[in-house]
Amino acid sequence: MGLYEKYRAVAFSQGLTDCAVARLSGVSRQSISEWKHGRYNLSLRNRYKISQALGTDMYFNLKGEDNEEAKNSTCAC
Image (cartoon, rainbow, N blue to C red; front, top):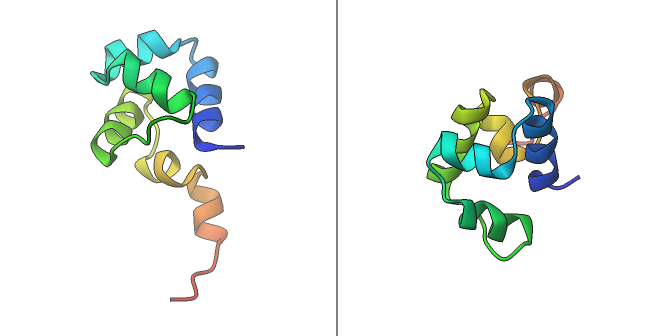
């Protein structure tokens, strides 16, 4: 599942449309639509704004996984 699909699942669970998320986050509806269709990659600033509007963790918004998955993953660094 891609990042947009994960975002959509969270927004849908909250009863929010892309238009409502755009209004709440201050990210343009056009940017969200372009992202949906794979023609645009959201900037970190816009990802942050959307994560704040949805009440999600920025890590989830960036990586598409929740904190439990991140905590359980190993880093080869």
